[in-house]
Amino acid sequence: MDNNYTSKQLNNNPEAYFKAAKKNNTKKALIIVAAIIIALGLIGFFIVTGISRVLKGSDTYNLAINTIQNDPEVKKLTGGIKDYGFLSTGSIEIDNGVGTASLTITVKGVKKDIDVAVAMEKAANSEWKVTDMEIVE
Image 1: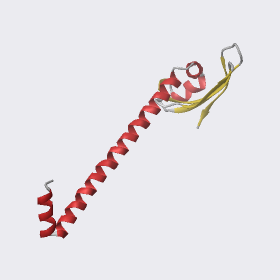
Image 2 (image 1 turned 45 degrees about the horizontal axis):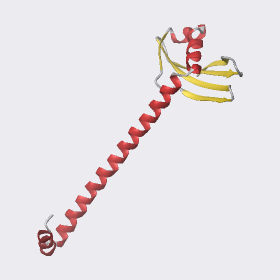
Image 3 (image 1 turned 135 degrees about the vertical axis):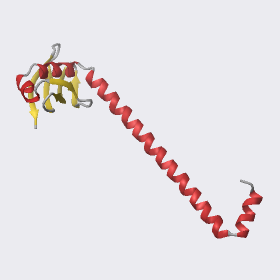
Image 4 (image 1 turned 45 degrees about the vertical axis):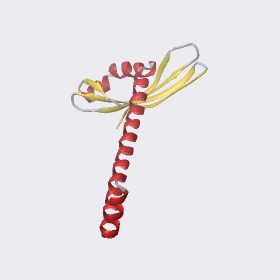
């Protein structure tokens, strides 16, 4: 903005000048806040998506899915498995080849969707084994 023009505006009608300046600053602040919210949302989305991909690529996830698919109670409650939820929750801990894992997986069924919690353990130099599975209601 031309300084001469701004000075004339300020001298002629200071109230209108400051009102317009305040309105302009409010718009800028709203744009900045909106950009920050969008950026944080995208960062969160990529973090959650990345974690989900890592989890779904793990041996524990595959073992949990196989166990769920072969469970007659799950088949009965769901009316047959169509798919699994996008987000699975849980934890996988491994230390010196020994580990524990606990996953909760949403099972999308023909009749109804359910959550299934699967607990697993891994001894040194062995494969993961399911120690417990329960339907979370």
